[in-house]
Image (cartoon, rainbow, N blue to C red; front, top):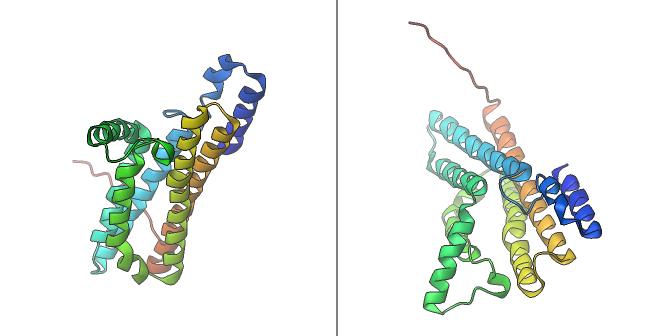
Length: 219
């Protein structure tokens, strides 16, 4: 629904050219931070972090190692904060300054958004650290985790790189750029939804159920 509302808003802006409508369409614009879609995305990532934390606790109660699950909980908590407080844009500015000072790589083309460089390095390191762990999980969980990660990364990295190249060549207001960042954000949301399903399915298959209770004690 968020994607549909975004598409309607972008269609109205693109074909009417009335920029005064941006104060309304901005509430559902997938390319703008601190609005309804970004609030949803941040919350979805936070839910993922909580589920990883729950699994780590359940695994510990059964005498299993929990540090891998706990690590993923920390990673997704950071991603949730990143989505909510736009940390990657601040990192992008810092990375661009470092790139200019070294001169090894230019922040242009597919690397027009420099945050991709440090995040890609961290992603590769995380993948190497978790490779054997992911393969040790039940087959269905392994397949779904890899699929959800692939969908998310294709959007977050792949289409963001294409969007950066388009923005550098033709600005942020072309139909091509709008299509690219719409697909990017849609894939990110679908990837996180699939991840949440995967974690809930893992909990159901391995532990049977998950319940929360709040105990209030009076002195």
